[in-house]
Image (cartoon, rainbow, N blue to C red):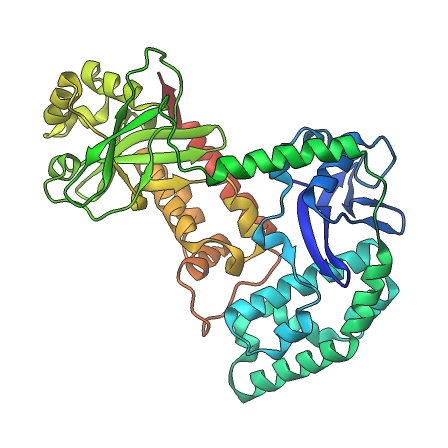
Length: 433
């Protein structure tokens, strides 16, 4: 999805409404925020196909047409406009949610619902909504996480918020129902979008592997399959390696040589590389702080067989790796704790610690720190130390504890610092073919 325009789903009286939201952006030294709509109207569609059809076929003026990312949105695939779970808001269910116990998940869900409604009220100038939030400042307690709802006083506060919502939420929903309108959509564009979405769903449900890329070749002692190159003569870029589950086999080749295959996903694609630790210091397949990455098993195997001008060549067991690469017996298996996915984390950080995948963030931080250590650069360690806002955020997100003080929003600075660290990492990798 275009980074600055987000598809969202709103649960309202007549059913779900699909639309687009552009969080704050800066243009001509001014800050803007908008939804798909025009003037006092918020455009909402009964399904994603109608949203996609409208985006692709409309030539009418609307509030997002001048957004810098709008041309990108028009070119997106239909399945890229399906709202994710973090941007799906059951607004009808808010009173019921507020009546439940203040668990971390319930608090986070209520915070998300209240926040999107508050933004709708501000952007669309909906008087009942702005009056509801401005006249009831205790609603802000939800943004502080669980710390405000601990003990008897905390329980009392949660009950007061629940009663407040129960009393006024019908007025909020009524004002949103009146705001939403559905413009006409070209039926041919809708039909094309429906077919595209159905094809994408079918492809996602299919478990068939892509034999043109990598072939599964048997199982190890614990049932985890290994990967080797296909026999195709086309030396094309392929997915670097498959994420595989399974326990580590003590007889595994890579365990015995003390080197791990790793899979790295950046904004440019998925790559395969190697890493080991010598005296607890990370050493990558690379040289002088630059990490060599490969888009196919074939490419990395050929490199390992033919090249020795890299830091892993100094590892005592590397001769075994070179021999296996040379005789064709080298197989690659990437375990879950060696799979690193970087795209989207900076945006997730901006959404707050309770909405982020803590395990994915923890792995990403491990990779960023290892790569910086390998390059002899202390900047990543300093930025991620527990005394910095980002370090505090990461520690809270990866070690959740409802009794701890939660970081306070907004998290724009933490997001930007993390994004800069990812860019620094991407500058440290070199794609080899």
